[in-house]
Amino acid sequence: MTDPLRLGIAGLGTVGTGVVRIIRQKANLLAERAGRPVQITAVSARSRGKERGVNLSDYAWEDDPVALAQRDDVDVFVELMGGHDGPAKHATEAAIAAGKDVVTANKALLAHHGHALALAAEDAGRVIRFEAAVAGGIPVVKALTEGLAGNDMTRVMGVMNGTCNYILTRMQSAGLPYDEVFQEASDLGYLEADPQLDVGGIDAAHKLALLSAIAFGTQVDFGSVDIEGIGAITIEDINHAADMGFRIKLLGVAQMTGRGLEQRMTPCLVPASSPLGQLEGGTNMVVLEGDNVEQIVLRGPGAGMGPTASAVMGDVMDIARGFRIPVFGRPAASLERSKPAAAGTPAPYYLRMSLEDKPGALAKVATALGEAGISIDRMRQYDHAGPDAPVLIVTHKAGRDDLARALDVIPRLGVVTGAPIALRIENV
Image (cartoon, rainbow, N blue to C red):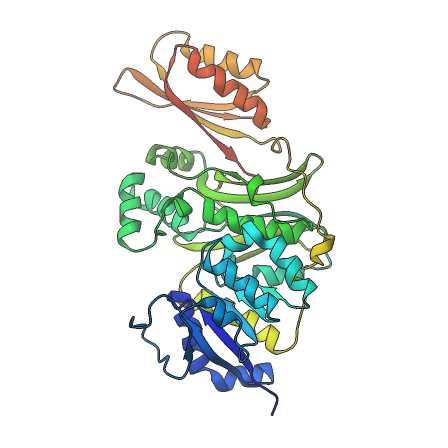
């Protein structure tokens, strides 16, 4: 019989226990599909005594994940601890140095250290697989590195954080304000220990940086992702956008332009009739555009035990079958440092502001926009009972720098109360 593929699993939280469960329940199926048994030989986690709902008695235990990574009876180090530094980074480096392949679900680790780790792995003749790090159960990494390898990619975009999509769609469906739905999501256990990783757009931006590197053949550059969370979105914005035929999404977009690589993870308006506009709840969606394939849409669960463990096992099975490719689809040494785009691609914008209800207020705002080179496509003023009049403006395509210049002037006109809100309208 062909020698088994022996796994060492570091991290026995939701995903780790899901992987253990799959391997214990589907051992025969995995062996048939891989052509060899897939076994767990050792595990590591912060607490030995915690009840996890799976039998771990057959496996050796290491308190130190670095020691696990260096064991002679481990062929593949499965890193499911999380965190971009500390034990996850040290253990992954130790595994590579010890001649192990690595499977990880850790998007933060790769967003911060992916290029260095890829260089080390490829120099050692090892692979790092990370399907589970991006969009949970959706096989988007495999799609980019394999299925779409015959394309020059033109754009990657998507909703990559299910918690944010849950909050935004719940606000719309229930007519609830942001703070109330945020607390609901927290009570349901949807939020990270640090909620800003979710609602601040950081978690999703990690994922976008990884997809961008694969799609455009560049080194991972998380530091150049333009990040804005959803905390400023109000129920009024949700309703106003719906009135105009749009939905608000935390949308990641990466595209190579003449100015450089544009990467942004920001709230945007998308047409309500589009696939992204129709995406509900905690589901993820990634849209890939290439010169030959044109556009494909991948939709599925972005988190959870089953979907993420499924993605981990997809990577394990490829290694078991002997399928090996560079970490980011091309040799790491060939990946160039990207030039961040100096300005975003021009787009229409949704502007919301409250104006003092007095003659000439709207004219002053229109003049400020015009002087910044921004023309108005449509405008709507809502009925109001108080002294301030809520006004919505949709612009024609405008450059981000022009918009920033206008938004710097408008609050100083003496007719606007509070800070204007500006959201990009994305062509999807």
